[in-house]
Length: 516
Image (tube, rainbow, N blue to C red; front, side, top):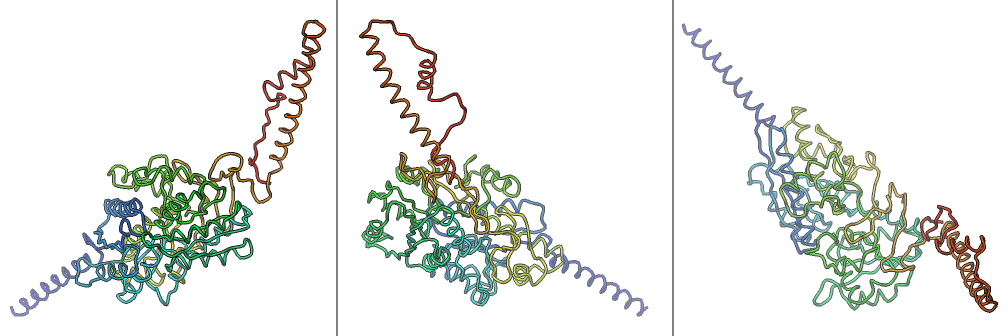
């Protein structure tokens, strides 16, 4: 009897242990589990324009809501802290985000967008052993695995952005370059990278502009710099977006935007969305039409596939900053932000499939390629994977790819693509301003077709002048003799030619249509 009772107890114990194992397995493999995903957001009216900060905040929530709505056995809840793109604020925000007593468990974080904040937050993430993925911080220094082993990026670092600018300088024949920087780590480092990448291609001068008494830009200093800029010079703004706006505003006030030189803006592209008429001065947008810049490639509103579900959801929810239908409004790293969020979801998916615990440590191993859950996927910004040696976007799976864009009244229009340091398919560009001086003719001046056009136009003008003079003399003589006027067949053809401006050929010539 006692043996039977012991057998029953043993069976009960086995059953209880079995149930415990089932429950443990359910917990381990994340059935109905909730995790926390951080977002280190830039504050409106910091170094990021309000409209851009709102757009990024919306993009994060859109990505979270869309991915949570899909068939998964877990979900993420957002935990948001503001960094203001500031070193001290970035550190404080990260310390708040990574407090161990907060539940549910933090898996990792997206952001910060700005390099200075990313550097300070990166140190906290290293100390507390959490990963973070920035979608817009581009400093090469963040690639150091010694200083920032927990920092990863869905963007290419500044060395590739600088190479894209150098490729543009080479293809467009730019001979003199002025690089504007301010006293921030990101700005001065980017200026140095551009200077090194351009090298002997152009005569480059790097300026560091201080802040003014009542503004972020010293207007007197900027005015002195602009006075040294000649007609064919280019200006690169290696500054944060809000400072790019400030520089353009000062230049506009100084009446320097109408001169035929370009502000070859990098952050100027993210600084201005001409569709935001409520937050962007229409007069200023009109004044800088024709300005050009380099922007990350991919993720346009017209792109189908990986991005479509996010943009359609964004539009249906009417969240701020929704990309306008038919407009290219994703020059602001939104695709890279969405992909940063997607990265965490895909890592957790992969860990569950591998029957591995979903912990912050395993997430880090997946990101640096040392454990299960390693990712490579087709995202909004292209093929996404990470280089274990740098934490940056891997150039092995996708070569650095940028767009050369030109500002119009409605959008930034693509005028060429820069793939792996080579500018391809450069289209005719129009400088800010109007008239013939606004047409960019390329480094060798007029193209051969344009030269033919000028020759034809000159001949046409000469023939027209001779014809008018001959006709006047003919009419005068007929009037003197009193004989009736009669047009010969050759005269009729000449009249038809002058009237139509054509010999009947369908060929036409435009100055600047092709580069020489």
